[in-house]
Image 1 (cartoon, helix red, strand yellow):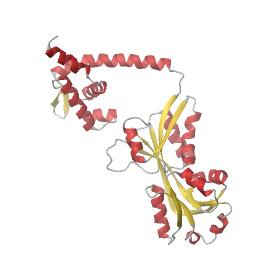
Image 2 (tube, rainbow, N blue to C red; image 1 turned 30 degrees about the vertical axis):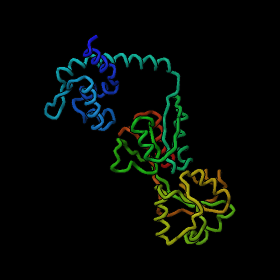
Image 3 (cartoon, rainbow, N blue to C red; image 1 turned 135 degrees about the vertical axis):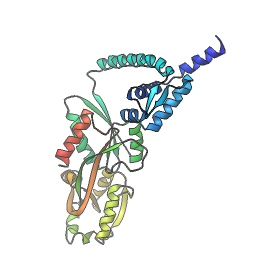
Image 4 (spheres, helix red, strand yellow; image 1 turned 180 degrees about the vertical axis):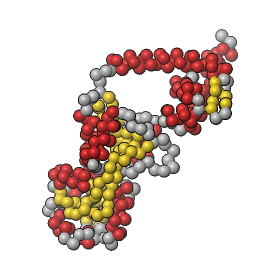
Length: 310
């Protein structure tokens, strides 16, 4: 075999399936912008991958026609092979789906650490009682890492107490689930002490708080300042369940959503002291798609809006 033919064969072996998908989608949609919307990827990502494919083939695949892209002669030659590849891929996927027909759908969910675990459970619970089996895989972490996993489709959904930050280079959409008022709680043995003369009773009161990076903590700090209250901070947590567990020692207060007040009182032997008037926390489902389509995600969002936060 000649050196040239060996080199051509080597290039062909390094063709990337994703590159072919981006090529096929751009050819079908007529522009990189439309392809990016279809694939939920940034235009820069698709453009860069197309350039790599063209470098592998050795010739341009598209030419610009006005604002759109049209196939070159090489692109027209490549297209039938790509369509055959995806046809075979479709047959393979259909075969696998037929073999796994009775297996539950997997829903990968990221839960931001600052979300109360009871809120997360109440939000996700409807997906576990659907007629079509759904197996959830839940991960905890900070919002930035969750969004990174969402962008590469390791996650299907992220539950967060704040929307997608502006300016972040990730294609993700925030869907408001609802909001809840915030109240202060304490172990039943000391709760009555702080109900009198509220909110002044919170001044120098022993307090467990979320870490300063959380949305609720920033809102609490503003609320304390507006009421001239300076609590004694005993500890800070990035895990709300751990914070509530510490409260069972019976010597501190903590803030939590009204939406799960009954569960908090039952689980942690706590009592609600009073509501933090004007203080609310919002909850979001964040997805890689503007319009939610996954049946389990639709069930989760609908039930949260109508029941949990309705």
